Image 1 (spheres, rainbow, N blue to C red):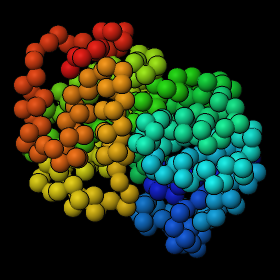
Image 2: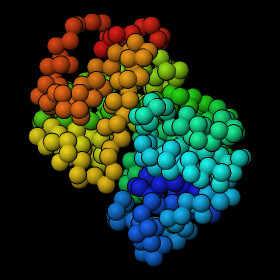
Image 3: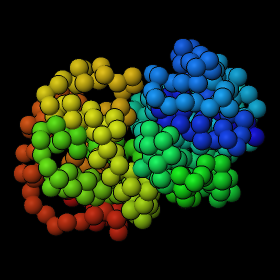
Length: 344
């Protein structure tokens, strides 16, 4: 089997490392110097410093070379670039290839989930062959073989099982799901909530604040996910609560780090300058607010993060904006779409 991993960031490099023990694995890097370092130094100092990349990972900056005759294509490029990366080489992707999307985000220009973007680009591809990977999977911890779990979701159960078997190891336990929508919404939304959690850290707030943000963030995530067609219980699993907790709490979480820098008083421009790519929560915040408005769902935390990255509010405005909203009952949005309408 040949596997092509599109995107040599931390997560793409980690996934290529995992699957290279079981399949011929090609890793595409946009930057020629990244591909060269992986090939000649067995290292990716730009995105995954400190780890050795096995020689079984073949890196290239020629996407067609990576995709040629690949039976599995793993998408790990930034969400806002997935379409522009894949569209020019769509004809190279095998019509029967399994496409596993490891990117967690929403395309801002179209407000489409990543599986919808891939379905657009690969117009003749079997929709059942397009799925996603989502869970509490910080790349450096996975690369260090620290025990964790994740979820692969495909509408075709046989594809999910095949991807489970490809990825599962002693340190990575893989579960399967057929709720692609729910897993994608969970993976995208948690990045926005994590920025708010980081702001709280930067402002010096404690665990009461963090726990409250995670709990109410889960309510937003699940409410919006159900309205978008996801199943309620998906958001209590790895792609919902699990990923949300990891991203809001970990010192390795890029979105949480961004929020912390903002909370400490840095401008967005200055904070972003320290990242090789823009953390996914920044464009996703705008997309989520637009999508939520279209289905009449209120997302207070996502909205205040959206306003923050636009420069419409300061970090000191965020607390009052959230705390002084009209009081209401604690509804979770897990049971029905209607229950979650216009509730914090």
